[in-house]
Amino acid sequence: MTYSRYGDNSVLELTELPRPKVGPGQVLIRVARASVNPVDWKVMSGGLDTMMDAHFPVVPGWDAAGVVEELGPDSPEFRPGDRVAAYARKMVVSGGTFAEYVTVPAEFAAAIPDGVSDDVAGALPLTGLTARRAIDALHPTAGETVLVHGASGGVGYLASQLAVATGARVIGTASEANSAKLESVGVVPVAYGDGLTERVRELAPDGVDAVADFAGGEGLLETTLAVLRDGGRHVSITDPAVERHGGRWLWVRPDGAGLAQLLAKVERGELVVDIDRVLPLAELAEGFRLSQSGEARGKIVIDVGR
Image (cartoon, rainbow, N blue to C red; front, side):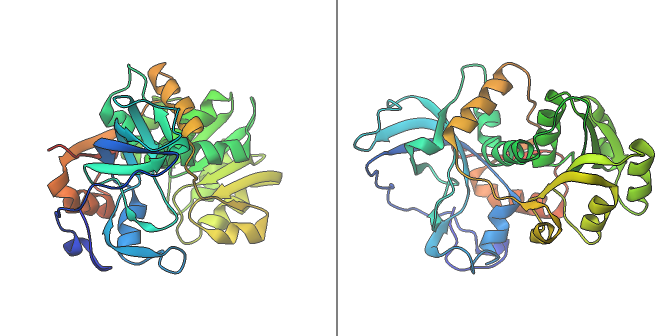
């Protein structure tokens, strides 16, 4: 799937392109699954044009799971036939993962354990690595209280589980429809919206030790600052304004070693990836629509072979 100009979902086209070249230190992945992330359609609309160059026609997509098809020179980490996953973001928006083949640096890729399906491996990279980066930055410890904004979303759900695993108490904002989902992984759910500050204060009268914002929106930073105790830590993937208030604005980075650790947690049953549905490649525009509308309750996986 490609687009030849910035725009809405109507610019997506099913296209034939040459197979990507494989340079030194790279691996060519025959993609089995990719997955939709909000950044995909935001990039397609031109939302990152001031930050990243685009070479048209663009193949969108930054998540991939598949099989190593070919190795470039000096790529000893893998062999043809290895199952791998990767967060495949590059410096230029162009050769993405909603395609039969994608080339990535070997250090972006991680072996998929036998006990992890292609669907799950394809859904994990961007959300999992973002969650891991956020929790690593906050470094919660046993006995602390962490507030996660957007705890039932793709990144928030994984970050909440990683925070729970540290022994911290985790409060997660979500709709009431997702309360049971959060409770099932040890998170204390709290409804977002008007009155959120007061509801969090009821659960944590002395304030929370750390806040991770995966939701954004008007007034959310004010809520974070209102419930954060003195000396507390906070990060956001949505609002750069946090840096003016002692917080950190995060961007995920490709990290094969980190992804391997997350895949191992999935295999051991320590991390649950929530998948809403699997769509064929030709229905990518519908996948984008579901992501934009908020209808999806988990990751939208794209079966590239269908």
